[in-house]
Length: 474
Image (cartoon, rainbow, N blue to C red; front, side, top):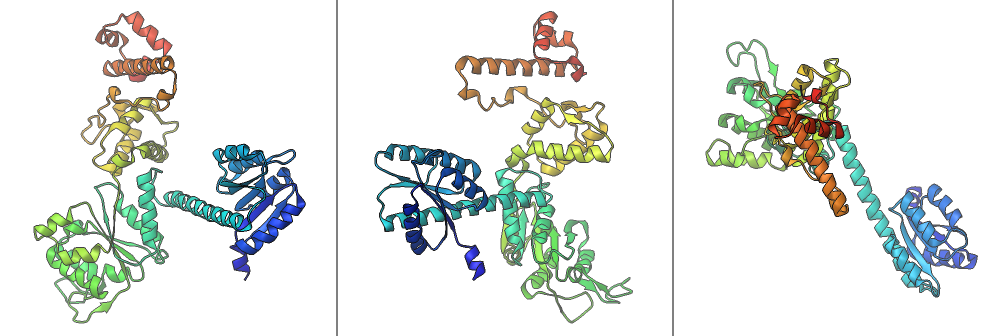
C-alpha cells in the first residue's frame, strides 16, 4: 500500500479563502484520487512547491502580496512540468487569458462545477505525467550518451544510443549497420553493457582477419586430432562467450560454407567443435556488424538469405559524422584533450579556421578518420594553436579544403536591424577574407596585400582593426 501511496499525484490548492480551500479539497480528494495540500498565500505556496513538489497547482488569481500571475511565473521558473490551473472571479477573465499566454494549463470561473473542475485537474495530472516522463527519457538519453564511449549530443546520436540501450534489454540477435568508422564496435559494447550479461566480458571476432579454416576453429573450437597440429582440445569463442555476448564484426566477409554452420548456432543455440560428432548447447547473445550492402551480396549469392533474416531480428543503422556535424566540436575537443595528455603537450587549442575547416569536411572515414587526423595534428603541430595546416592525412597533405566562402551566417543575423546586420556580415567577411589571404601567403603581409590588390598599409590597417596577427599564419 505504501508503494501505491507514493505513486499518487500531488495537488496543491492555493486561495486566501479557507472555506473554499476546504471545499475544493473535499471535492477533489474524492474525484481525483490524489494527495492534496493547501496554501493560504502565494508565499506559502512557493515554499510548498520547492519542498513538497506538487504535480498540479490550482490557484486563485487575485490574492494579497503574491498573486496568481506571480505564482505562475515562479512555477515556470522552478519546474515547468508542473501544470497550473487558474481560478478566476468576476471581472478577472482578462487576467486568466494573460495567464494562459504565460504558460498556465487552463482556467475556470467561480462559482465552479464540481465535475468540470475535477476533469480539468485530471487532465492536468496526465499532462504533468507526460512532461515528466519525456524529461526523464531525455535525461536518460543524455546519461546514456555520457555512459558510453559515444561523444556528442546531436539528435541522430541520441536517438541511436537510446535505441541501443533499449536493445540491451532484449536477448535477440542484433544487426548493426553503418559506414566504416561510425563506431559499430562501440555500439555493440553499449548494447552489451546495457544487458543482463554485462557482468561478463563481451567477445569480439574480427571476421575478415582470419582465413576460413582458422575462423571456423576459433569460433567453434576443436578436439584433439581434428587436424594436423591439433594436439589438444580447444574451446571456441562461442564457448568462451557462454552467458555473455559475442560480436561478429564485419559479418559480410564470412565465407558461405561457414555461414551455414553459423546459421545452425542461431537456430538451434548449439555448436559442433571440429572433430566432434556431438553438439554443445550454448547461451550466447549474437551481435553482428557490417558496413556492406548485404542485400546486394544476397543477390550475388555471396550471403545466405536465411542467415540474413536470422541476424536481422533487430537492427540499427548508425549515423555518419556528416549527419552529426554539430558534434564535431565536442569530438575535436575530446580527442585534443586525450592526445594532449598522451603526448604531454599542454595548452593546445584549435584556431577558428581549423574548427570551421573540420565542420566543412565530408569525413568519409567518419569518426575513425577524424580521430586519426587529430592524433597526428597533436603529435606533429609546431605551435600550441592547431591550424588548418596541421590537419594532414596519411600522405602528409591537408585533409581540409578550407573554403571561407562557405562559412555560415551568424545565427541571430535576421533578428538585427538591417544596418547592424549588414555591418556584422561585412565585418565577418573582412575577417574571413584577410585570414584567407594570409593563409595563402603563409603570413607574408606584402604578398597577401598584393594578392588582394590592396596597398600594404591599407591591408595592415584592417588587420589592426580586427586584431589579426600575421605570425599566426607563418
